[in-house]
Amino acid sequence: QVQLVESGGGLVQAGGSLRLSCAASGNIFGINIMAWYRQAPGKQRDLVAEIIRGGRISYGDSVKGRFTISRDNAWKTVYLQMNNLKPEDTAVYYCNARILGGTAGDYWGQGTQVTVSS
Figure 1 (cartoon, rainbow, N blue to C red):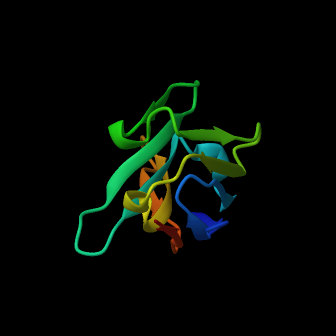
Figure 2 (tube, one colour):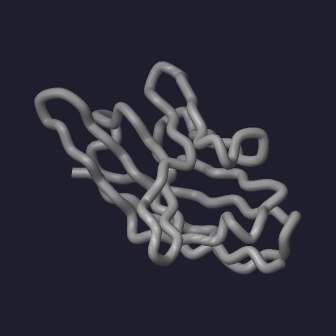
Figure 3 (cartoon, rainbow, N blue to C red):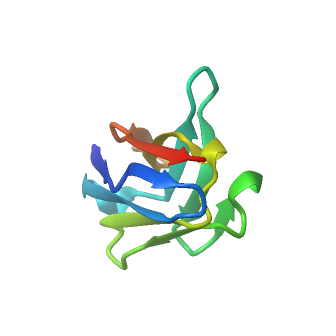
């Protein structure tokens, strides 16, 4: 089991920045992938960025060059630095952790609201 708690959301003007944090606890040593997703009202939940144990990082097309995912060495906290925010970035942002293999699991945080005003 993995527990995830997001923080750092809020209201920001277009062009501004926010930094989201996701604190993980429980079976953090089993985590293979940590990611950020977002879901706007009436839309599906989309991948924003993910980081794989071993170092590979990928981003959704709409955030490339503006958002940066990072983590601490212990995989206890994952960050999402969001720069040059746009109104279309407004959504609930969710932290996700996946464990692959024999004890596979897919875990979600409760979400944090990000609102970008124009």
